[in-house]
Amino acid sequence: AQSVTQLGSHVSVSEGALVLLRCNYSSSVPPYLFWYVQYPNQGLQLLLKYTSAATLVKGINGFEAEFKKSETSFHLTKPSAHMSDAAEYFCAVSEGTALIFGKGTTLSVSS
Amino acid sequence: DAGVTQSPTHLIKTRGQQVTLRCSPISGHKSVSWYQQVLGQGPQFIFQYYEKEERGRGNFPDRFSARQFPNYSSELNVNALLLGDSALYLCASSLEDRGLYEQYFGPGTRLTVT
Image (tube, each protein chain N blue to C red):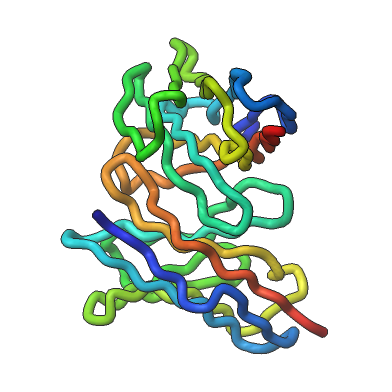
């Protein structure tokens, strides 16, 4: 069974600082990987996905993620944090018909 | 275009009761999946339906069941509710049932079991 580990349940950054949210996966086959964002009392919104094309994936709202097979990682980054980025972020791997999610990382942004 | 819609938004039930949650996918999407999100955790996969057939089932008891209708909308039923069933239930739709297709989530139904 595949799994996802998100290192750091809570990340705090200042506005304008680099955002780095970590995700490691375990998969016996080339994975499909996703990052989702969830704002309070809302559903999940897709930020970006990796489906074995380019290893650097650009998403919405200035986020991007790099697939590193040797490190089994798919970390999410944004060069400059904005207050509106404060939310819960989930990394997920596709297993058959299901998405397997990590436990999530709460991003706080201070002014 | 409208996104994934779910009803009701909130629901309060008593232990032992039964509940039905509803989901309408994005127009043109044939696959619907259901997830349970307990507070402070990531969503957990319950079911996936594609063209009215069950294509995947997560590790949930038989008290959980679902179906998909000819118009691709879906219902999730939970019988004999337990306190532990209190969660946000998310529905997601995708074009096809293969993993490379992204899933689009609805706002969820918040179920509280007392």
